[in-house]
Length: 53
Image (tube, rainbow, N blue to C red):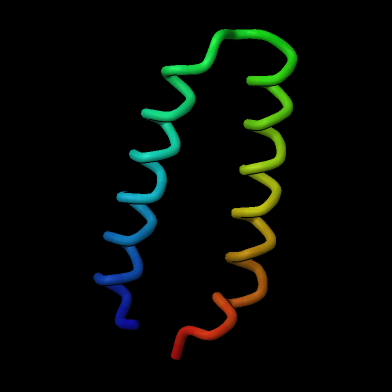
């Protein structure tokens, strides 16, 4: 995956997650989900996207 495609993928993923968050009521579940997704994204980026060449 080239850098431009990777950047677009990240933008689409981020936009979809933000849209999902907008539908959730604010509170502990929303906060926890946000934390989990941010940590997963960090780990995903750190590992260099397993399975993608």
